[in-house]
Amino acid sequence: MKTNIKTKRSGQVIFSPYSEGEGIKKALSLGRENILFELKSSGLKGRGGAGFPISTKWMLTAAAVADKKFIVCNADEGEPGTFKDRVLLQEFPELIFDGMVIAGFTIGAQTGIVYLRGEYEYLLEGLEEHLIKMRENNLLGKSILEKEGFDFDISIRLGSGAYVCGEETALIESLEGHRGEPRNRPPYPVDTGYMGYPTVVNNVETLSAVPHILIKGADSYKKFGTEKSAGTKLFSVSGDCEKPGVYELPWGISVAQLLELVEAKNTKAVQVGGASGTCLPKSQFNRKFGYEDLPTGGSIIIFNESRSMLKVLKNFMEFFVEESCGQCTPCRIGNTKLLEGVEKIEKGEFSYAYLNTLKDLGRTMQVASKCGLGQSSPNSFISILENFKDEIFHTNGHGGKNE
Amino acid sequence: MLVFEKNSLSQEIENLVVKYGTSRSALLQILQDIQRKHKYISDFAQQEVARLMNIHPVEVNSVISFYSFLHSKPQGRNIVKLCKTISCDMAGKDNVETTIKRELGISFNETTKDNRISLEYTSCLGQCDCGPAMIINEKVYTKLDPETAVNLLNELK
Image (tube, chains in turn cyan, brown):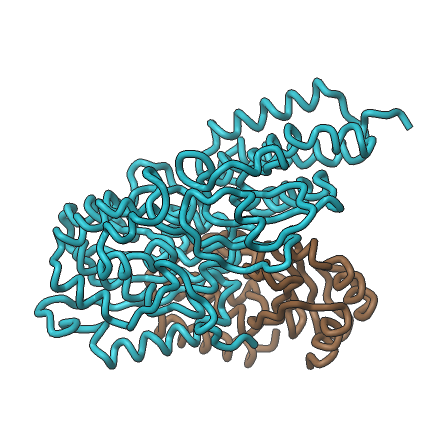
């Protein structure tokens, strides 16, 4: 299997050198308020895709009054084309766990839980060993680093193959031993989370950035990126290119720059944000990654000229039909109808009026679905049919012609 | 199911309940352990879990039916899951898929006659930079070509 290839990676923040425990020491010397202040001025936002400011989440939970609080690390990355968390879990577990300890200290939690997706069960042993070492070094357990009264420990729980459990309330349902069906929000987990206690749910990548930000300071983090999108982002690049893999890049980089970096040739389309993201044609390759233009969880899938975009779309819609939890009607029925539409286009059995109705249905799903899954699953349907009209309806004759 | 098999399964589930506790949040962990060992969670096992955790058996069944890694019907001794999501698809999943089906003489979502292997599709495994990928039991194998994939399967007992 894969060996440790840590030495190969280098980057500006997350992939920069770090020695274990350093971030926790710094956090203890700063104190809670300064940590929150530092994170707020760093502008760090949730890196799973939703982009909610981490300082707000932590502040709300820190302010909540409760006997118990929880910090949950969302390691359930299931978006097609994303694997950055796998790399972090495998090569940089110290960053994630230190980030969780810092979160525990800041919000006043005693317990941290890593929700590891079932597909990554093969990483479990290494992670558990790492936790044991941390306990031996007093980075976990009672009075961490001799700080009186600061007790914190981390446990790891496995998922069982459900994409929707990446949604924070579904994840909490799953941790509580239920079907992973999203809850209505509000109440948000910061008020009523795991077992009804205030809970912070953060993405693996978000937590990994925290120790670095505290050590180097918010200002040095803000040096990277743009005004509204501070810092760096991990991009998981796959598909038609010479150098697929995980890249740490500052926000604000353009799609074209990224394509050059990974040595993609004859690129026809780039899917940004996985199956729930949007598909960009060549004419939009000058767009820039960042919260102001192209927000993303970092999944980049590259398609070259030889790929059929209709086939790509069909693959995405099959994914959503499979992964919809089935709880709310727009998502359960909507995705099935959109897939049906794609199959009809494939066979050339459709009318444009019907397709317009489907696009309307897609827009209805975007507003009427209960959670992010159904709200974002029509994105690729709409963007691929809009942006690759010529290919799908004219060039390949999936309907433009009578045969 | 023979009586002594039932008794040993009951004992096993009792041990799991002692290990993880009877709170509802332990349910998924208990089911995962049964799944890992027996490759499926039988009706009897579901009833035992429900009895020991003091919840209705339908609650147990509804959790099993939700998660794609948990099965309520008997499976082969080895469960093989092939990723069918787009990056693996583009990396040559179709060739691997066809070869596996030909070699084993079964389709996906089926089990070989000798009960050795169950084939399944799965959504993105997070190995998009090194596809095609598959999971055999809990282990992940990447950069498959038809030959290596089939060799891996043929080694399974």
